[in-house]
Structures are given as structure tokens and as C-alpha cells.
Length: 364
Picture 1: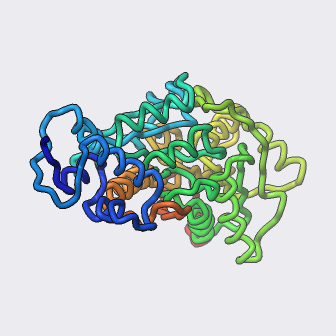
Picture 2: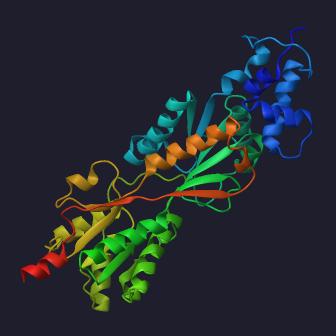
Picture 3: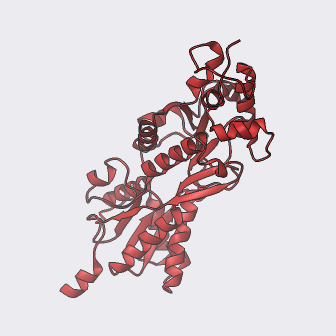
């Protein structure tokens, strides 16, 4: 009977040789999913420790070697329509970069596929070594089974309910930096608009804004505008921005005239542009405007070009993919079995939608 080496078993299972050794020695520091995958490889090859071996060939028993360099990417909260959206493409580009540099492959699964949870996990277990999942407000039905079957890393917004390592945009820092930049440009009465008040990432961005304004003694509750917007699940990209007339009506109701308005993302800032244009309101003469995302060409094609917080979507996805590959290759095994977060911040892109009030004061 042909024999396999411990290195062959590691390749087939997509783990390190040290992990195989710990499984064989019944060590207790191996995640259940990795333990099961390693045991499957041992049973498939009829491996016996201490025997001479041969290199893995193309036999059926070695078929899991094909999966050891392949990961699944699960956009469980995104429908197929997102594949034409710049945000989705940016995430994918980051994952592709990591896979290309590490000689891995990826299979993409969108949120509106009709496979039952048990069927999805069973299919993935036989095809891939691990999974990246875009985190969302509620873990999908198959999450627990998937997490038990293979290493999983999350990317997107940090969700503590996911018992996995996650890589996220530092949304609090995004709100802080946006408010601080406007303060440096002489703005004091700054509004923050969150039209989707139930979204965790938008909530945290608003908290960053509040932190800065309270620190400076400038926080005024009516300047924080929030509105509930319940999106369908899985979400679909919006084809046109919402009417932002309610923002201007809010300012009129409370008798406030902010010099600058921060929006929780660029798309809603675009909606505010359209509302202002319809009413003869001029940006930035009447309001300076800042968005958040800076994805694609939207900010550049608006008139005037929109200042925005550039969010590191590509870096987040790339870091998450590298984290998963590290785990599969043994270097990141300490991350398994617990919720953890790595945050990446963005940068402020100043364009013509923001007036420098310091310069105006000097001229006057």
C-alpha cells in the first residue's frame, strides 16, 4: 500500500505540519474545524505515523490538495446586482491582490444564492480550505456550521457576535477625522447626517463626530440628524439617491444654519447635492459638504467635486485575505476560535465642496 508523509497530510488538509502533529498527539489546542479536516485527510490516506512515504500524486485520495490553495469569499448580505458596483469591485480587488501574491485562488458566493445552509457548508467543505465572509448586522444561518467546518475570517464592519478574527474599517476614526478637518478649516457649526440610523458602521461614524464636537464644546443635538431606513436582505445597491429635503426641513424647524454638513456616505451626499440644486442652494457657498467612501468616480464628477473620507475597502479585504492564508499556513493559528478585530483607518480628501473659512476670514 502506498504511504504518505506528514507533509503530504498537511498539504491535503491545508494546515501546517505542526498542526498535523498536534492532532496525531491528541493535543487540545486545535480548533474543531481544523481538527476534523486533518482527521479526514489522515483517514483518506490511511496515514500511519513513522512510516516511509511518497509525494502526493493525482489519486482520488489526494483530491483535497486541490482545495488547500482555494478560499471561498461569501458576500452573504449582497445580491448579484452588487457585482456591477464599485464598492464590491474594490473588495474583490483587495482579495485578488492577496491571493495573487500568495498563490491562492478564490471562489465567490453572493447572498441571493438559493442553496440551503447545510448544502452550502457541505459544498464548501469539499472545495475550499477556508472562507472570507463579509460581516453584516446578523450572521447568516450557515455561519456556525461554516465556522466549525473550516477557518473563517470576516471583513467589513466589525461585529462582536462573530466568533472569528475580523478586519474592519475604523469607522470611529473616520468620523473623528472628518470633523477635525472641518474644524481646522474654520467650521464650528457642523452637522452630521445619518439617513440609515440602524447601520452599525454609520452609527460608529456618527459617534466619532460626536466625540470631537463634545471635546471642543461645540456639540448641539439638533446638528445630529438620523433617520431609520430598513433595507431588504440581501441588500441591493441603490440606483438613485434619496430625496434629502428632510435635511433642509430639519434645519428650518430648529432654526439652525450649519456651515458644513457631513454625510455618512457619498451616496447620500449626492442626494443632498440634488436637493440643493433644485432649491437654488449653492455648495459650498451655503453649505460645505463632506461624504464618506470615495469609491469610484462619483466624488469627482459631482459639481463641485465632493470632499470625502477615503475608506480603505481594498486594504481591509486584502488584509483579511492575508490573515486567512496565514491561518491556513499555520502562522495565524493563534487567531482561531475567538472574536478579534484589526482596524484600518482612512484619509480625508479635500475637494471644492468645502470652503476654507480661515481663508475667508483673512480676506475679510
